[in-house]
Length: 258
Image 1 (cartoon, rainbow, N blue to C red):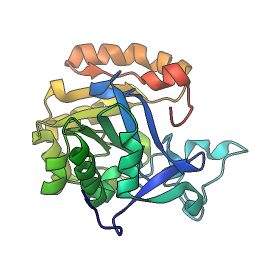
Image 2: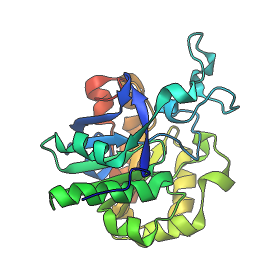
Image 3: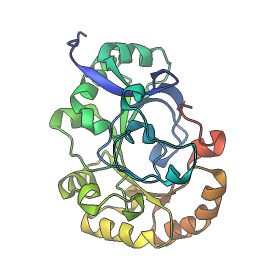
């Protein structure tokens, strides 16, 4: 299948190459499933605890981050952390792996819907077995063409603990779409027990079925996750939600691209 050369994907640059890697899904509904990750750059939100801040926390912006207090932390030079890739070249890289479960992550991948539609079309021209999951913050509704290309939405609406203002992190049109979609599941990141009240409000407003909801502790270290999982599991039991750990953190720590 031929795709015009002017369709480019802006991907995160890690270790001087586009961040495309074969691993296992560490969170949510598909935890443990071998997958190829394609990390897009750019995001329309700016979570204070984000562990992929090299996709948006550029020099010259004023967004706060929890690492700001660290002496060796500084914002990223945008041109050094983004690589523009021809869609067909991205598809060739993905096709080298034997794995057919593709996770489009970010950043916020739904900022690049047209290019990702093209990517899915190229890969499916090679094999009908490709399965596409998209990890999204739930602020952007898909186009009809994008929805047709995606098998599963892993929607992670951000809470106040992300330090994003509500007017940016909560978009009713998009959340109503995902709540009604049989392809969508929801993952909420909790840092404190008090975050539950906000989750329950969103569940009620958008009529999200409990069996579509995963709760995950915020944290990028095994110690933090261990502390928070104990009370979070009890919340899941009480409300009939699913529990999600961060399996990749348990295995590799905070290492990127694994």
